[in-house]
Length: 213
Image (tube, rainbow, N blue to C red; front, side, top):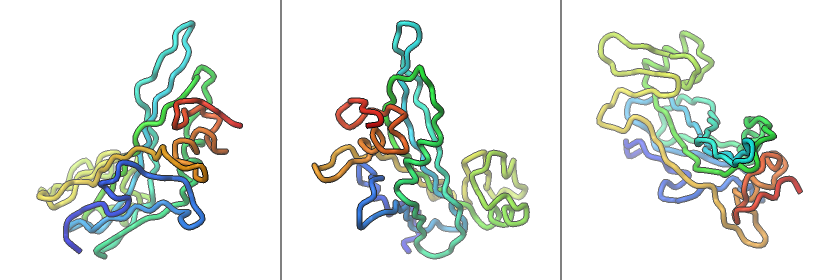
């Protein structure tokens, strides 16, 4: 590989990601080039959204909210790594993660952030020894500090790696695809009308809230 920690898929120069399955592509793939010194990776996907709700006679908006969809961590020393998941799992995840709130009149999809966390051998050994459910993105701290100045630190969701000259983690931001044709659905419209999320009252690509048909 090139030895530079970079995102390959989805294309980082693209403005949007598409979670609508087609007959040929049912999975969403996150693929990246290896990071120097990294032997364990964890891809995560964060979906941001806002809610408009009624309070008394006023309509208010929440601060931006987020959901984190964590993929299994993987240990690899090949030049490229990737994870895949069923595209509909994005919608299942959103549908299962947002609680019913009768005050909400609509929700508005924001960006999708794709992050790949990279860890070195020290962190991998720590996870193996402590059986931290093979996840580098835990609710509890994996490390508070390490003696010897290795520079490996993990908080609840972030960890740095040994090579200080490289970016710590990969992070790219995309919008959900919101254009389609008469024969295809786009990601925003599927969020608005699909079976897993239509009850959440997301706006569709033209700003309407169709809900469950």
